[in-house]
Length: 267
Image 1 (cartoon, rainbow, N blue to C red):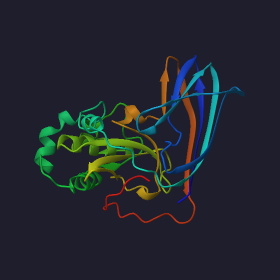
Image 2 (tube, rainbow, N blue to C red):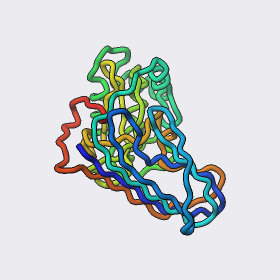
Image 3 (tube, helix red, strand yellow):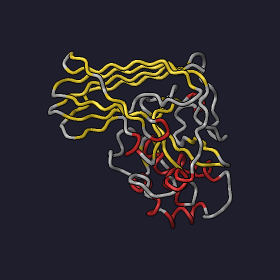
């Protein structure tokens, strides 16, 4: 399946800043990625520095002077990603509570709702379906600093909030879980998308409680504990305003059908 993705941003940099973007497709064995990225401030082109993170996530670091920054990225992706080796460290890390997936605050609730220590490969699917029923998708309903607990209490959120709650509940019942930022052909509203991944039967499987886009067409950008690891833009030092952002993702041909029940992994 060929997928064509792009992201275009305009950022007002009010004071010199070090910006970190995570918008580039993760380079994974088995994928053929043809891409281009351009950055400019007030028409002067700058070259970002690339930092490779866990799971082949890529951070592009830019020392931006004050001015109007424009960033354009596009990629054509084909092939099937080869699963990376699973390490004991990953399984330990993704069992722990994190900034936005506060599983330690949900231990009692999760155990009462789903049980604990039960050898059940269907547990991640049950948790994802429960979150999909319990939480309403409402654009603008959450703040950037909200975590899984706020989402559970408010009953509303966007894709990152749904995934945070899935990840937190799974960790609370003893299942390693993590988050991925993706390009998502078919997603409405179109934007960077976030999904949950759970360790099931020896492999990482992808779950999307929002059911906004078929999982088979997703393109991985970044993988980590929660939104703090996979944010598309981080600002260190200066003052900025995101003026505009346009994200697009398409597949060649019709979108695949997804019942959102069967466990799959991001290809």
